[in-house]
Length: 284
Image (cartoon, rainbow, N blue to C red; front, side, top):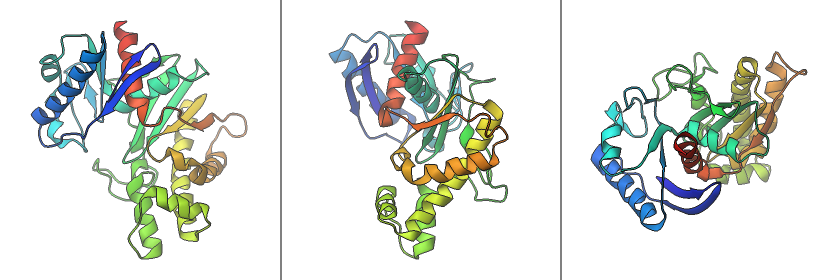
């Protein structure tokens, strides 16, 4: 759980604490302490909260949180109002991360898509400077299907982009190829950079499926910019070449139109930066 205080676009303070997953009361208790710490140090005027969830803003409920099951299908308005007497916004964490990356990018306007690659795949879409939320704010690009008969996804479907382009499948592929327990992604990356074939194969597979996902986004949205964020983005030099080759091979728009594709600049700060900036945008 990360928090930060911004003045305009400058980060004045940041902190993180372990996420309390046991119960809703434990979670909101830890969240309240973070907010109180920030308010004791700075004259906070608005607050933004990002959850890895389907956020139903009309009913003020968190609907699906595979990583925080204690909060699934629960009200968020009353718990937050119990400790915060300030204007605030609540949204999906990837939506807010996209707004943060967009707000601090040098290229404004157009269509801007963020993919966060880590324990899951999050997506956020900014069009013309505004978050695109669709019908109810449920933009979940990590669950487009890239392998119809593929692995079972935590969401209950099969073959989602998330089943092939996250930490778990990267480690599973490495373990399958080497017949040994897998190290963490950073170590697999180091081995790939030293030329180990099993590690290189892992990233080629990862890049292939990411490229299929990028092809769908390109054909559907024709975005100006796609930014890759999240905990695996620092390994992009290992999987992006295959992803781009797949995109060029599969995209209907190539060679006439392809987006700029790059890694993000905010890294693990994108969530709280975007939450703060979007709260100021809505309530400033």
